[in-house]
Amino acid sequence: MGVLMSKKQQVQKCTSVVSAFQQGMKERAPTTTNQGERSGEGPAESLPLPNPKEEGEHGEADGKVGPSGTSQQAAVPGPAPTRDECKVNQEAWNRLRDGKGVEPEDLDKTGHQLIPPAFVRPKRDANDDQPVEIALGQREQPVNDEMCEVCEVWTANDLFPCRTCTRVFHDGCLRELGYLRTELLQEMRETAHTSTGWSCYYCDNVNLLLTEEEMYSLMETFKQCKIIPESCLVSDELLQYRHFVSKQLFEKDLSDEQEEEVLAQFAALDSEKRGQIEWSDFLYHESLGVLRKFRTENSLVRLLSAKERDHVRSVFVGLDLDKDGVVTGAETRWAQQSWFQKFSKESQSCNVSISHVGPISESSPASSSSERSSQKDDNRPVSWEDFLRESAIYILAARPNSLAMHIRLPL
Image (cartoon, rainbow, N blue to C red; front, side, top):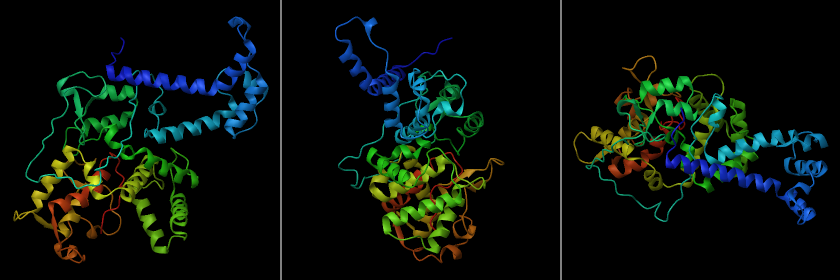
């Protein structure tokens, strides 16, 4: 039975076809031009075959990697083997630029029929850094969409909502897209309708929050540091990366204390304690670092969804027991840590932190008042507006479904 395509999917498919056609024409432009000059006005049958030598020269000039191709290899239709390695690497960089992370077809090769969405990176406007007024007493209460984001069909209780935005999905549509493996689909089914919630493939990928310019800056840093897209990193590689960035920015190596901080962050990202961090977790951590570096707190607040804003309101109101519109610095840190709380896989009745780095007493909600009061700004007053601005980056960091902690909690 065929799959009905919505207008949006048809537009996406046309866009991808046009893009592929343009890319193919660009690659074949030199050969086509030469053929046109030689063929003149003759019939199509008289067009000469591509010159294997010329094809080989183009392959070596464009690829710059791998062994030199022979004339037989260059004459074979499609990309020459000499350019395979370059092509694979370039496709990985393209996926990184487009915000797709790992291509869906790479997860499962078995017959995906639906077209993955085309992501569009945001643009910043002139008022992006200006304060945004978000009333404390006015709940937004956003309503989830009625139809599946992928197939645009309504099937009532068979739809699974995103905890961050208002999109809803069929598990079958997500499977056909190839975005979720079997075990991740099962996790989505178990959590989407609970207080834990589940982030869709738009919201889970915080790298999509970066603009084209911000993404270009991050990619250049990766290239200079010899970071290979879609590969896992061990602790030594993360340290080398941090040393390189420190030399580029500050012209000095990391101090011993800074190295310890890098290793602590590595432990926070390595949630399963396997001795390596997944590419997506590293990418999300670095993307959030770019947001902290280039965006103001007001700009980050503008990135929050209506569901996230309502959740922040509930937390603030719960902390403001005397209803004076002010909480303390210690309560603000507690709230920032609470964004990272999820239900454990073993018990749906017990809240646990995603990952604790260092003594639990320093950042846990279970810590006593005397331990929290040791902080310098524990008693400083924090208004609703300041609370929202200070918490924005931590709320964004809690979007991914991964158990990794992409930003370490403030001590």
